[in-house]
Structures are given as structure tokens and as C-alpha cells.
Image: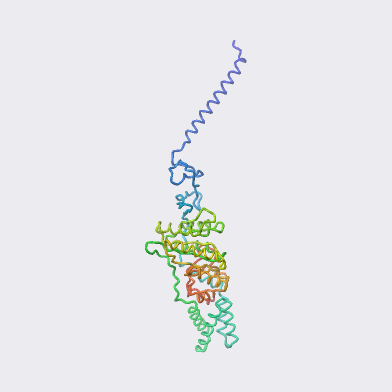
Length: 404
């Protein structure tokens, strides 16, 4: 009889070999089952480099992006590259129509400028209007930042009309004041934006201003206005000095499907980025190219000269149709000094007045236009993405004189 105890080690060795062999076979089969055909990849993989077929690595992979607002949606096509300049876009939102914005303008101005309008109406409806009352009217106008010359002009006109009118019923006073304020704000100025293609090239809008007035945000909001009017827009991130300015602008554009031309090089020449943006606009037959510029103090000669260079470089390819100066309405008369200097460096064609809903100094509209002969074309009404609207003279005055 065979000694079973002598065969036990041999049996254990055979079993171990069989287990190991089975594991190896399973591993090989598993690997074979996971081989992917060329052109497929998981969501966490790197996309193939631009210019080469799927599966090849040319040394410059592009990370697979997720569409904003949805983790499950695939990204758009990889960004188009112009040397060191990148064009990005992912459409996700539909901006609010312009008509609704104008209504919000009136509602918000009623809240912020109501003290000014009510004060004037109360003074002019007084039983007795003597020199002291007229001094108060003038002071009210000055506090609203209308400016000395326009205030004196309006007071003189009101004096004459009150004498002729005789009675001072509230409705009559309101109608008189409305007429004179509309004249003062000047409805004859051209406030429409030049945003139509000319000679086969896109309209070019250059946006300028000092630090902290919200230029990049304004460009993003204006892009939404233009998209709401069915315009094809390209943004140029020529603010190459402020950290994350280009990414901020690209994010604004991506929300409404507007591509942004920006440099991947820190501190790149802003004129070069502006040039590439206009070039891309021409090649892609866009309607409008908007160029965001770095904020600069009006007393810094070097920075102001650079702004002039940006404009000249753009004009080598296309005419600059609009130069919009962004001003903070809460700065009052200081905004006039900014506007004056910028207008000497680049011909300002229009003013964008931000934070108009947060101040009772709406008279800055009058002061700027009187001194520069440049119209306020757009007004910022709040922090929301669609809180930018074309300036409407009658809506502005009606909001001032509204009883709320």
C-alpha cells in the first residue's frame, strides 16, 4: 500500500502550479478584452494632440474639458490655436432680450435716483419760489453731479418757465421739468453702437478705462447683449497684466458660445493679442470683435501710450468702429478727468456708465456729454449677467421723476 503521507507534498505543489497558471491565463484574457480600438478613450483620458490621429502622441495633449453646467455633457471641439493664442468657446446660455433690460433700467433708477427727482419737484411746486428756493434747486442739481454749467443753464430756463406758467400744479411742474431734463440729457446724440460688418470685415469695439471700473465684466455683459441681437462675436483678451483676466473673459464668452482669443504667455504684448483677435474675426467672418484692455491710470503716460499702440495695431487690419470708455457712476466728477485724458489718447465714441443703479448721482450723464460731446451709450444696472442695457434718454428721465 502506497504511503499517502509521502505523496502529500507533491500534491500540494501540483495544486499551487495549477492555481498560478489559471491566474496568468485569466490576466492575459482580461487584458485582451480591454484593448480599445483606435479613436476611443475614456472621459478621464487625455485627448489626442491636435493635428494627429487618435492614439498618437505628438507631445502636446489637450485635456478633455467638460461643458459648463453639466458634468455628463462632452466638450466642444478642441480649442483652435493661433501660435501662442488660443480660441475657446462652449455655448451654454441664452441671454435675456434687450427689451426686458430697458424695463429693469427704469425700475432700478426709480429706486436709486428718486430722491433727486422728488427734491426738484417739491421745490418747484412750492407756493413761493424765491431766490433761496432757486439756490436749493441749484444745489440739488450740483449734488447729482450734473455739473456747474449745466446746472446754471437749467436753473435759468426753469426760472423763465415758472414765471410764464403762473400756476404750479404738480402735473404741470412734472411735465415742465421732464421736458427740460430731456433737453439737458440730449436725445439728439447718436447712441447706437456701430456693430455692423463693413467691407467684408467685422466691426471692432475697443473697451478702455481705469482699474476697477469693471471693464472685463462689461465686455462679457455686452457680448450677451450682442448675442441676444443675433450677432456673431469674438472676444480679444488684451488685458495681459491682470492675473486671470483672460480666463475671466473666456468664462463670460463661453457662457453664451462666444469664442475668446487669448495668449498663453503671461505678460504677452496686448497689441499682439488684439491683432490676433481681429485676424480671427476676419477669418471666421464674425460680425463683431470686442477687445478688452488692461486698466490703466489716466496719469500714467507709458500705459496710455501703449493703449494708443493697441489701437494702431488693430487698424492695420480693420477700422476701429467703437472705442467705449467704461466709467464708474459713483466716482462722480472724477470720472470726467478720466474721460478727458482717455479721449486725448484714443478717440472715445461712447461711454459705458456702470453702477448707475447704486448712486443718486445720475447727473454725471449730463456732465460727461456736455464736456466731451460723447454720448452715454450703455449703462450698468447691477451685478447680474444681463444687467447692462442701452441708454434710453426718456426712460432715464422718467425714472428720475417717477413717484415709485
